[in-house]
Image (cartoon, rainbow, N blue to C red; front, side):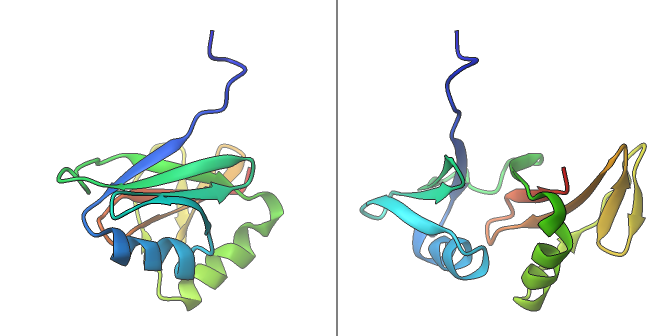
Length: 125
């Protein structure tokens, strides 16, 4: 029923203005639309990331959004690091850590958080 319909990632935040600075200045996303102080929709590739104000922001303890960046992985990790992004380190079966990057199972992964603690990641593909 839904296999041919694109999904939209949705991330809850406490302060939409502060989050907009992160998603726009740090991640380089461009707003597609805004609904006052409640929701900003960002175009990201052929999909959309909705960032919305919620009292439950930052309560998700799992990855909220993933970008598959292919061979641009190292350049993007370096660019984010240069903008002050701190990468998360996890002990996960089948993955070993090389600096800030987790490697294994044919992929490279780097996790980081937005200002509300939402977990985001990059995957080499």
